[in-house]
Image 1 (tube, rainbow, N blue to C red):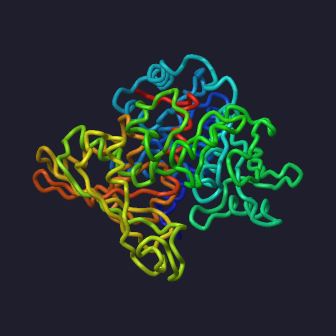
Image 2: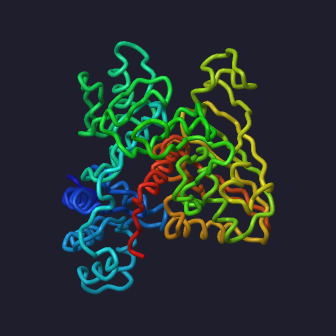
Image 3: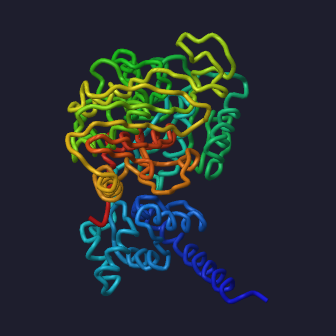
Length: 479
């Protein structure tokens, strides 16, 4: 005989599943018809399964030490559907927490909280903005996944092409397969087919032409109907203004965005930290490095509140494609040793690069890196001397608040799980995740541990810059 407690647990689960199922069409309608992204503590619910929606709600425990229930967020969605909303991001968890404090009629409450967004259906862009990937490697394919996922109703950023060197007669099929299957990030969320006649990959209805070229000047994008395109160079082959300027000599392009640290006077942008300083007339931009993106938001938050006298940044970084699988010649020291068998001490320019995004920290930080035998997710250890003393509780509470409600809430994530390890961060959309249980404070000295998905989290930062260039910034609601 099944005891009552067991039966009650199962009935409760079935109820939650049913509610999550009912949420899916509302979430989809808001996204495709209004360009409204429903979230729970900034974790999007768009294109999520029933179990994913429930998992996102349960994750709230790591933020506020209790769960957010779908029975509470579902009425918020139902109220939102009745409104004529403009594009934006709406956090259902924040609506629920405020409603639990204020009470009253739900429809009236939601309407008042979203008053500034309830201004009538509109589009962010008058027409879709073309995007081209120059290179289709690890970062290129993840950028493709993100751009396709965020295509919505088709009036946003539109991935039009990827430029590569032809590798073999079955090049197109191999590249489609690499987009479809990923050993780290799993299968592509949707359908992919190959169009041999157009030499294109069609992913969830998005036609991505594969253009073969050895250099940027060879490509005539207008020939493919591509105009005013933002070219994202993820090859790293050119990092100065002259090299990246080659992209702008091609017909049909408007901007060149580098997914690596830029050299010379190229602005290195870490979205959330210094993106507002970007000159609207600048055509060549760097998205800096994954490590710079991971540490700069947290460093900015700490500097703004506590001040930083000096510090050291040590990164435990997953191995990358430039290392050898087994011992072999490499032009850089130590990197020739087998990546999967060794921890490899190497240099990182991230500490110096911080100064390009945060000039107030120029000359205050040193840095080094250790490549470790994992394929993805890295860890930055920030050892800082602050301008004033603090405590673990004050520091963690502040960073948790920054992750929940601040201009850096898309960049800084926060976890208080005592079991968190690197693979838990695979797929993180944030620049970095503060591991609060590892925080150490003694007087004015602190040590912070920041996880980061050096592939996916960084790719999201790149897309945020593309959105800024295109004028597609979505505001967060409720305010």
